[in-house]
Image (tube, rainbow, N blue to C red; front, side, top):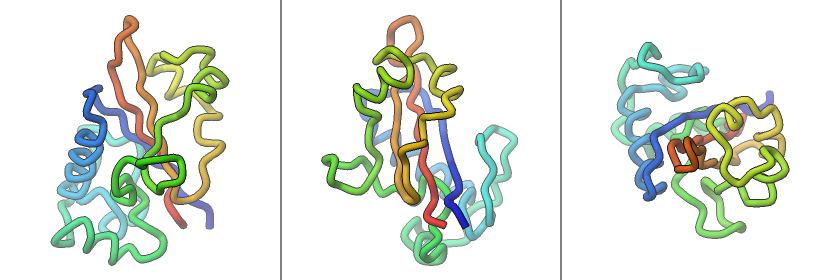
Length: 147
């Protein structure tokens, strides 16, 4: 079985690691992860199921999900410290230019890109800063589950 694609859009804040951790906590508290919801649906909206967690912590949820992962952002421990590290990585300048023709894409460009996740393998993730009126406005987090 191939990996499951997941994605989230959050308001931009310069402390991207903090946004990522809040998002992980929110999705954990909502119970929007496997095995609580075997295949979570995306995009997450105000109407998405939120059965609550079946585990005491994200680590417990990861252990219960086993090798397939949670099929969500819970699988990402944080931002990668370097290109060699595992974790959420920013889309690099070269790829931004290749995909969008700019280093400041708007959210519609990011969401509409069929090629954005082509380079991702199972278990990998990335984020893109999306702009509005030339200013950072959104963080787009995306990745593939392990299974």
